[in-house]
Image (cartoon, rainbow, N blue to C red; front, side, top):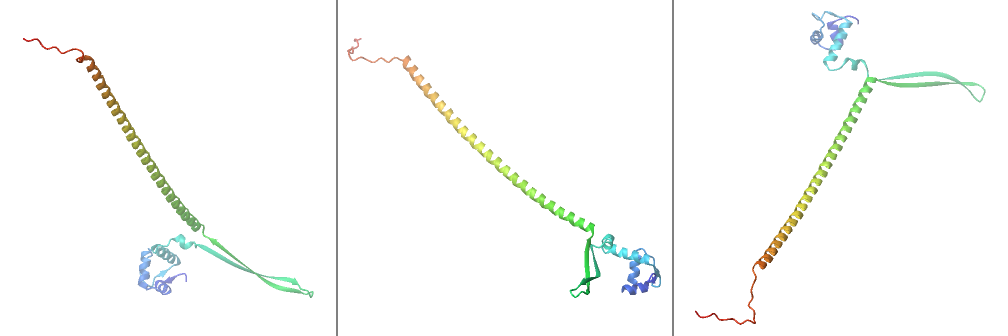
Length: 201
């Protein structure tokens, strides 16, 4: 089936001829009607175009995810029996090997690594946020403690100032009182002296 007509190819694919002609035109293959001949290269071009149009990459289509090889080997082994005659035993060895596509493995490894990195980054951001909140709390406590210490010191200073002012005022009053006593001698009448009457005028 190297070269077939468009109508025969449409019949093999089980699609309408008009739709196949439209798809061939979209793929860039020039056909004039249902009786034109399509080569194998044109069929491959159409297949590539349809895969690309439907979202499948060529590499993904060309390289399967994994390949499993099964082999079976048969051998005959002669085993001596107790009667002296040799018996023939059929041995069948089955081997199954699976090969994975390296690009698929690398992609899966990369995705796993990205997930691990995202999880690690999320843990790191949570840890940093907790440390930041703890530091803010410590700073707030320190500032509150300093404010209370300043207020207590201000109260102590104010009390000392008031005491000093009261003491100074008391000392001033005392010294004023002492000075006042020294400047005005008070004469007290003695009891032994009789009071003289004033002469008549």
